[in-house]
Amino acid sequence: MSEVAIAERVVTLKDSFKGREGYEVSALFGALVDALREYDARRNPTAGYEEYVALCRRVVESWEFDGDPGDAASYEALEAFQSWPLFSQVLAHVSAAIMPKKASSEEPMDSS
Image 1 (cartoon, rainbow, N blue to C red):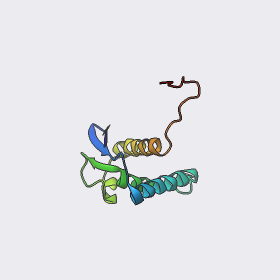
Image 2: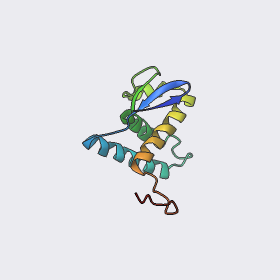
Image 3: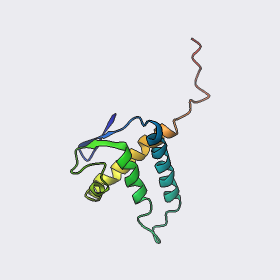
Image 4: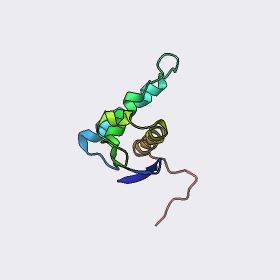
């Protein structure tokens, strides 16, 4: 589990997902990316919100906010300055797991 600080509160994020759950997290991440590609604030200013909440419900293990992080209604109760950094941290956490950084070809290889 990884802990991050959001608005001076601890949020614990899951570091591993097994079997179907891992596939579902990957699919939710893909759905979010697709929703954000289609984002047009004039037509749908909340595009991607449902996908963010669905992803957070799978990734957030626990938090020091009110409510249950597994319940979609709990995200509605968060202040914007709590939910924005939370969404950002969850997205970065999942993105790093799904698309790990490649080693630079300029770095020397370990010959041991």
